[in-house]
Image (cartoon, rainbow, N blue to C red):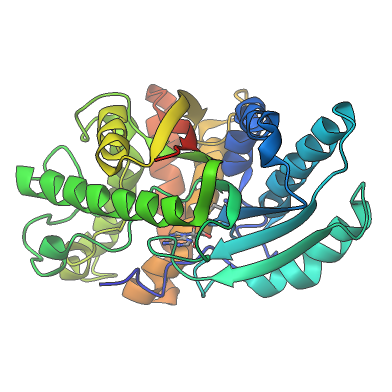
Amino acid sequence: MEIPPALHMNKGDGENSYAKNSQVQRMIISKGKTMLEEAVEQMLSCSSMIPEVMEIADLGCSSGPNTLTVISEIINVIHATCRNRGRPSPELRISLNDLPTNDFNYIFASQLPSFYKELEVKGSCFVSGIAGSFYGRLFPRKCLHFVHSSSSLHWLSQVPASLESNEVVNKGKLYISKSSPECVLEAYSVQFQKDFSTFLKSRSEELVHGGRMFLSFMGRRCSDPTTEESCYQWELLAQALMTMAREGIIEKEKIDSLNVPYYAPSIKELKLEIEKEGSFVINEVEALEIDWDGGSNHNEEFIQRGERVANTIRAVVESMLESHFGEHIMDELFERYAQLVGDYLSNNSTKYINFLLSLVRNHI
Ligand SMILES: C[S@@+](CC[C@H](N)C(=O)[O-])C[C@H]1O[C@@H](n2cnc3c(N)ncnc32)[C@H](O)[C@@H]1O
């Protein structure tokens, strides 16, 4: 099954939009800036890699301030490196990719005009949108020089099929949890292997030899996928839903029948898939710890931190939950979730683990 069409970040720039609630993802981008810049510089340091036209893709671009921030960073490094080496800057073709349900109109109508205005070298950069799944080919063969993707590859192409057809196996949960049977853990891991290897294979065909990818996405440090750093944000969301089921606001069976198409892999799983697929060499990999609320103000009351976490998660998963449970429960659900997260953070300092991965397309 394809990714449910309901998976899209909250559109526009309203109170619950992804544009207004993506500070955690912005923090990840800012912590990865140095490694991203190094990857672009290294790509350019091979002189044959400065063609007249350079093609760059951002996969899972979403819509909001983060979308063009990353692109600006990449462009700035290219211009600075070319300037330092006395070479003319290449013309840049920038492709912004996301699923067809993404709010591309917001990017092109509200963000792109000021982006073009602020460009250092005017008229040398051409941005277009590419709607489609990155779990498959998106571009012609050997046309891309650089691929970026942040906070997107933890989304699987589908809920593992064995869980979709079996509502009793992961009862009362949305994702892997301490109480999930081994077959649930296995089903998620197998789906990740299949998806990540399809992703690598597709990009290996699209990238020129020596081309680079810089990826960041959720992961885990330990092999056990049931630790709190791997899955507890989902556990608390399931708990919020279960309190509503106990009060008769939603049916418990509805919770049993929902699993999310998400997976936080271990570094070992990642390396294994990269080696198996064989088209990429790992240049660098790093694991970052990220506060659930982006870490902006630790003096805040826990309930406010809980609200910020709930707003961030809501902007990402609301479309999926709304299509399953209905719009009418969303405010109540995320209020309960904020409360549970606030209580949890008052006794725990669990963080997200985010991988930064810099890869080179090998010459084979
Ligand atoms: C949390 S947003 C990240 C947006 C942006 N890169 C950032 O760092 O703020 C994840 C994005 O990945 C997109 N996405 C998920 N699965 C995808 C797929 N198979 N193909 C393309 N985009 C996908 C989602 O639609 C969403 O816009």
